[in-house]
Length: 305
Image (tube, rainbow, N blue to C red; front, side):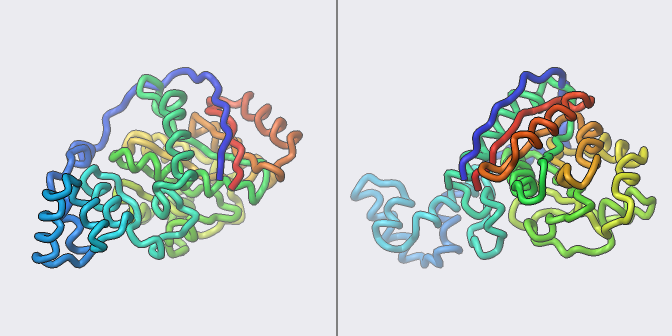
């Protein structure tokens, strides 16, 4: 997957008070890489000694020595380094949906594209000197890769160490349960918006400890009406105050005005199209409609995944 992006100049954003766990997340673990590799590589004390001797004799790093001796894979070393520098991802790609490339394939070209996109967002509508906003991700049609992009952007933000929230507001065809491996039940966003809020609706990702997910819950017959109730705006404001970053997935614009209404309440919007599939007329129409809303246009991304 490659992504081409053009970002508009954005105004306003002031910093906010980050959750207290940020300080603990910012600390770098002082554990030795050999200790971190023991478990995944099942290294014995004798094997660790071999690696250390080989390291001294050949002036290599511990990980390089372990690889040359055939006692570790490159993936094992990268995982151990990620633990030292608080860069979480899935050591076993079978444990995570491959669509979440930031966790499943963190050193791929696709993951690097998301890190680049994250950097541009942090220099624009989500910069520290701008008003705090949630980021709505919208697209013209189903199948453009909107959920793919939204979930990976949220995961990329979470890897900075601060708590990040992914809200699945696609009450037409939600997919967060597939991407994040969440059980779809009747408790979620719709329960909050309909006044039936319960505790524990926001779920923490098992693979990315700084990432939290609020699933849709039960699919309602009146999604647009739920979005336009005061409760949704209040929820966004509350979550923006509690999390470092909030990313909101939306229904495709072909389903109606849901996505535009969500974007207006989030304050920032990123438009996604799919190369070879999205029609320019539909893209222009969506961008034009969003430009008339209160939301700041972060830019347009062409998804080639």
